[in-house]
Length: 166
Image (cartoon, rainbow, N blue to C red; front, side, top):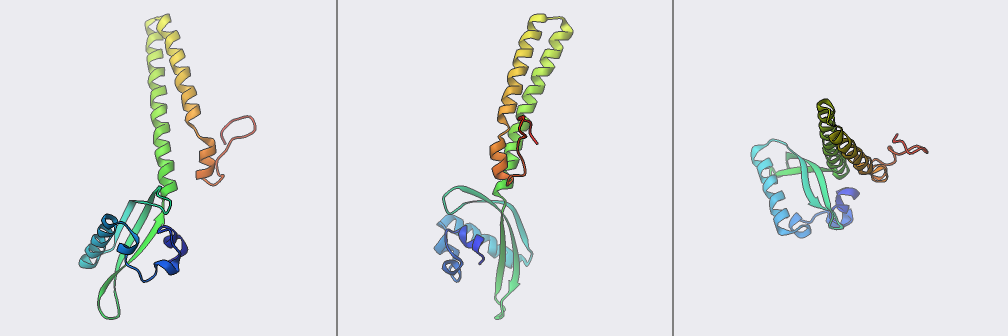
């Protein structure tokens, strides 16, 4: 067990090696992992779980991509090699992108309503539509969490001195 794997249990590698998952996890999670392992052994086929939701050592939700591969022990007994990769950050970014996409859809709808009011020659609705569009765009701008994106992306995202996103 490597350091990050052991850390997901809130322990060191030495504290995890040689122990059963039932000693390290809650009963439901341990039973689920055990059932997955039995299916891999019985089928003889590797399995990939793209978004296994667990809790990290601090109790926060974590998302792992897990690959389980069957192999035989020296005594001929079936076993499973499991490799878990933490993809929590990627999932948080994807969730944030979905939120931003929804905000863009709302702004686009406000623009469509304003355009239709303009085509009808309804000045009052155009003015109201412009106000609604301005509010939606401001909300969209506020929804872009540059500080959070910097944290999630490890500083790969940010703002220039004039406030524009880079």
